[in-house]
Length: 171
Image (cartoon, rainbow, N blue to C red):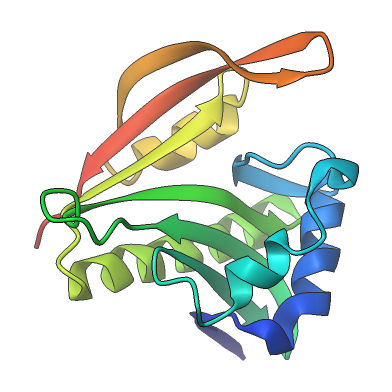
């Protein structure tokens, strides 16, 4: 049985495990901004999962009490920006292609519904330019390419370009 809900500090250990595994390419990644756990400040994940963060929410997908998928939503509460959110750090556990795809679909459908219930009309995400499977996945949810950000991430001396995608999810 699967459940999806906002994660909190009680989920911290499971969240850290899933994030670390995703960093090491052990899971299907659909949007990612964390590339090296040694560069994640110790209190960053605590902050994300705390109830003190009204702007950032981490959504978790559990199957049989195991955390198997996550995504972070960033939604500004500033007037004029409340109608859009940014989706980051979405991944699901690598089981097999079809099972993992089903998990990602469940998580994405929940995220869209979650956003619509909060009057969020536009959902944006960025993906590494070489993440073709993520492009295909998001296209299934009516995401279109907004633009390409050259040198969006710098890892040591290496740069990663990102494609920014956007979808109108208004009810």
